[in-house]
Length: 383
Image 1: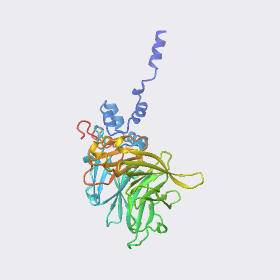
Image 2: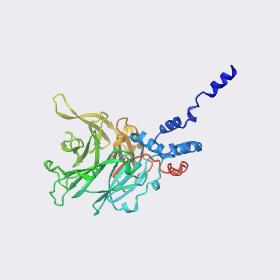
Image 3: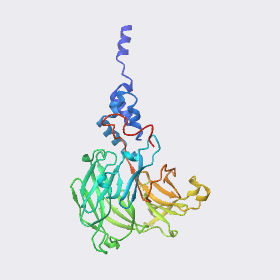
Image 4: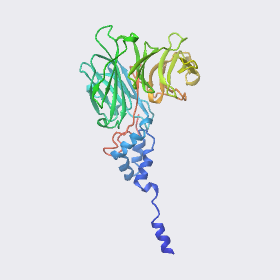
């Protein structure tokens, strides 16, 4: 009888943390913060081996692709731009860990999405798709005409390996003349070609039409603010353009920001003084589109401001599309406000020399697949 019990004990399954496959699944679900994998790698050599395995890192990036943290912003002033971190230690990624490549220093930053940045090389007829974390670059020819702006969308693959992804570029372009119509052109990496020009001439848009800020993805359409208030919408499904008028009865001098509502509809942030209003575009019972006010927010009641700043005006400096968070500047402070929850945080460091921010979200796993140590983030002196 004793021998039978002994045999049963020997045949009992190993504890979960002793089985590599089970432990790997547990580690995949660590928070997608820069300090998570370096900290796990310090537990023991076995954990370090698992979290530094390239296959594990690919799975980690795939698992957390839609929940990547906001690492920081690229503050852009003309052709000058640089990274400023926004997380607190120990997850703060120093600006020195995301340096601007020297050959891109005098190039034009167009925007970032899906962990990738898009940079235009002036007078070269090329654009660069750049992964700021891995520092990989991919050259893409630009379409004919003058590039006004552009955006990138990763359609499949692991952005940690640029040669494995499929992506789409959407550029707004125009000819040389003052009245040259604005056109939209689409590049798909699978075909390696630019599609036909889609003209916005029916809306009276030319190369000199004022477009404020980068495009925002709403559902399956890219949207731009035209003249700071009306909206140009480009459907990725039908590859067609539509014009959407701003809400009526707005305070003069208001600032605007496009966003996607919780039910994936088109929304608009309206900032006037220290008031912020969220509006949503929806069909009414008669089948007509109209703007509906969702929220009215008095910023002075939500933000920790000293008395003398409570009457100052707020300015929009940027928008984190995948976090639905707006960057507002009030005096010398910059706040990030999540639009659904209205949770906010003050940036620990104000980016210098710019009032245009391009928020960057990504998974910082640099170094984990090479030496296996915590060289991706300094856990002790990460300031």
